[in-house]
Image 1 (tube, chains in turn orange, purple):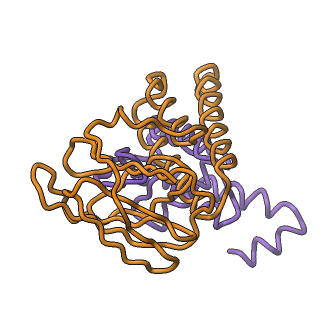
Image 2 (cartoon, chains in turn yellow, cyan; image 1 turned 30 degrees about the horizontal axis):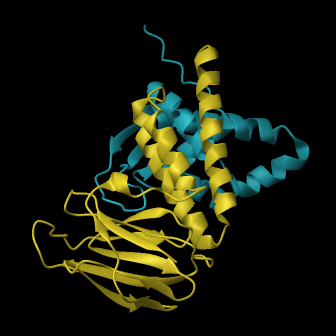
Length: 181
Length: 116
């Protein structure tokens, strides 16, 4: 398993990529991050459970919860970030170190990531009305996380995301062609 | 005398969406989808958002941006939808029509009476 950890320069959030993790989300473990050095000073934010283990980057906050089924090895380097792990169920171990990269662009999402597809479409989705673009993609990511946690395979999650996006585009085109009642 | 403005006809999906907004002040998209799924009327996010867009343009719902930070959503804000007075009246009218139609069906009449 290779793991990447980096901050996105906003000073508050981090992203983690866990690769080659065969087993998927089922148990929940709490991952608490504390940073002792400026300029990064994460606030005590508690975020929702985020699925890990399928090689997709997830964004984690100062205090976050991630879902694991079996022991997951999370490593952090260099020292500024200190991770304490409190398993609720399952087992989460923290060992060794993991590179901190100060640029989001340096981490390449792994193959076949459903979130990658969502983010790529989101980036070019200027044709989707602004009022629904952001909530739609946010809800889609949230529902993908739920599917992850429910144990759906990455392929199923990816196809669910693709079909939702395709359906939205078809419906938008259809609604533009259809006269208003 | 000015005539009363005609309420828009609602589709089944629009009725279901508006119904979820009657028991709670406001809901965001995925919350509406979950609620409808639990009530045996599953709809997709794509269907929901295209319907909400049209319903907002028709004045049946209003919306506002949420301000919660969520890691899972990668910074995308939630949009909360609430029922308007017009939406409430349109839903009431649609429900009345549906019940009236159902009462005309002999076998359903009894069920409608039980439900009402």
